[in-house]
Image (cartoon, rainbow, N blue to C red; front, side, top):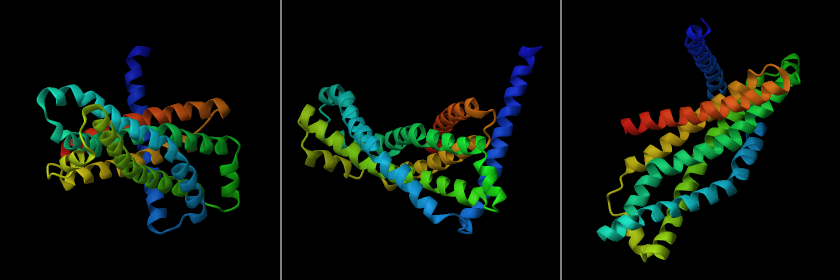
Length: 255
């Protein structure tokens, strides 16, 4: 009997999470649309989530671009397609690799931390204290964090695009003898279109919104004290990673 009920419970639990996230999203968007959120909290979170995440984004992006060239090197040498190296690196980086890997890095660093902070505030009754003081937790805590995570991922993806292409150009020159001028001629030869860039940028916005929404939702719904905070952080990382790949599929299929 327990085995028969397990799928039903999983479906109901998933529907409950999606429904509560939808309700939270509507409350966040209403605050953002009417500019009813704490600007100072937004700036603080942009610094913590965005600026302090740049070192890991820089290292990840540079080595990602270099790895792409290392993997493509045997095929490029076999076909003599050195002039297309820039296009191949740019296509994969701009559409898929940069937004996807950046989202996973931000999810692990920023999303998990945001859930832990909000969850700790919930179990220590700080959120209830805000309500007693007639301070809206959505406007003061949640909306600024949601906007900060979305902007962080969008800006970090732009940095990741540029740095990954720099890493690819450097490795192409070092490993294959493809001059940077040849690499960038292939990148700007016309094979890459505006849609390739906008696809990656759109994904970064959607990924950021998903990570921000899921981290805030799981943080605010913490129960069970400190162990509940740990469970919420784990749920945030799993839900964010799964959602990122689902969104990536549908956007790639559509655009």
